[in-house]
Length: 118
Image (cartoon, rainbow, N blue to C red):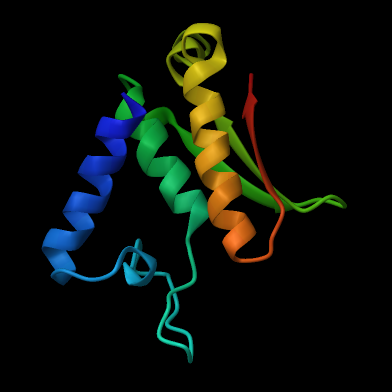
């Protein structure tokens, strides 16, 4: 399921901006172009896109990004009855989201964690 969402997310971006290398894909209007030609990654925007695609009421999803002593924390909050859709069976969905965010953050030399708030 997460793979299909990623394909839809990156396919949408590639169609808007033309074919590019994956590392140079602009994932949001708020991303900034760097001197080396790559783009800074908007991880809260990515998490928001994936989570809103999973739930029935995307208008009630809120994503908050804060700085902690450990690093950045992306907090997801939504309706209580839709938390199970974000977590998935045995936590597979949220673990996939965390893995993708952690991998993208490591490319930027950052430490980012994703938390679901009840």
